[in-house]
Amino acid sequence: MSTAPASPSTPYEVLVVGNGGREHALALALTADPSVAAVHAAPGNPGTAEIGTNHVVEATDPVAVAQLARELGVGLVVVGPEAPLAAGVADAVREAGIACFGPSAAAARLESSKAFAKEVMEAASVPTGQCRVCRTVDEAGAALDEFGATYVVKDDGLASGKGVVVTDDRDLALAHADSCDAVVIEEFLDGPEVSLFAITDGTTVLPMLPAQDFKRVGDDDAGPNTGGMGAYAPLPWLPDGTVEQVERTVIRPVVDEMARRGTPFSGLLYTGLAITADGPKVIEFNARFGDPETQSLLPLLENPLGEVLLAAAQGRLSEIGELRWKDASAVTVVLASHNYPDTPRTGDPITGTEQVGDGAHVVHAGTARDAEGRLVSSGGRVLAVVGVGDDLGDARDRAYAGLTGIDLPGGHHRTDIALAAAEQQRGGENA
Ligand code: AMP
Ligand code: GLY
Image (cartoon, rainbow, N blue to C red; front, side, top):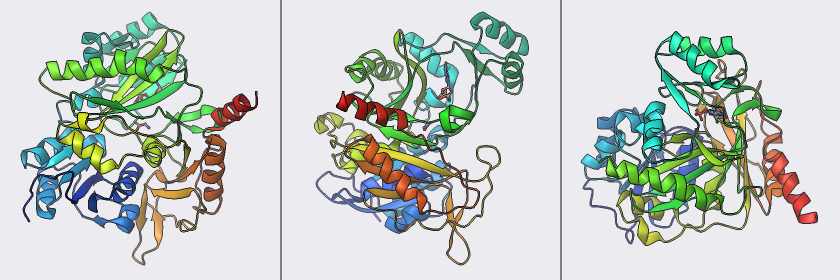
């Protein structure tokens, strides 16, 4: 099949690369765009299979993904996870003459190397914690003592959010440093965390709504870090002007610095921030949509998603103007498998996903079909229920009501996703 460049006025098909909750959420939003004629996923999951066509392909194989995109004749490829980006999937798709939403491997280093991200931030004078890159235990020990507790030790490479140890225990911090080839040891940033995503074509920047992710496995932020146990948007407690401030002091300088280096960043720039007493400071960048924040953000977006991502991929994002948002809130609660994030048990049957009530929907992540076609767990974060409502309390009620009907033996979820923000929002309105 031939691949004429996708045009915003002619329906085109889209290939989403990846198999997690973020990719199902992207596929759901793309399906709702009238210009998107069909959605394909590589390899996808049972959720994407319900609304599109899954293709068996290795997501991190640039040649295989580009070939599939060409065979399908899609007008746009959207790369979900970091590993295919770091492997050069977006480069290969673009080389094949197909529009691709996602940065080059060179630009994705903002995520794949924490040391590189720090270097770019320094060059662009971006507010972030001080850090030291350490390659020996002696260097690590010296850096821990320089910054003092609370200690923050990050594996320099990709670790799916699990390569970071934040602890007051110096021995634990040092042991983590010892177990990695290279680590970044960082000043502890104190303050609530915000995930701010911006869509960019390397020149124009369109920030999305700020969202918050819940990284720890248990209620009240107890237990180890995970890939994310839930998320909500918008953030009623965030001071007015914060998004504009971060756009001015972080996102634009980084996008400009990447262009200046000859490795423009085109795709989704995810800025993870701590709102400290000295203002917002960068904790990390990711080169892709966040998971599970995306599950909360996309149902609130009014613009057709394909139109925005295609414009970014084709370097004409300025034509979109601003992103428009529904006057509503969304809360995503992740259902994780037994023993996640340690060694998750898989193969457990999942029931009750068909009916989750008004204003709620299920997003599949670590699910699979067994030989009889029954839904079973296949990963750590199994699925999420997303509730959309007038305010956070309403959205929370819908998400948790949907979750009560779903059964997964040994499954667990947090009960406090968006709780404090919802109480504050209602309290503020009653005040
Ligand atoms: P990262 O993989 O860099 O996102 O780190 C995972 C999590 O560790 C973050 O979401 C924070 O909760 C925590 N973290 C990372 N860096 C810092 C820091 N410098 N100060 C405080 N918490 C941090
Ligand atoms: N929600 C955290 C991440 O996507 O990295």
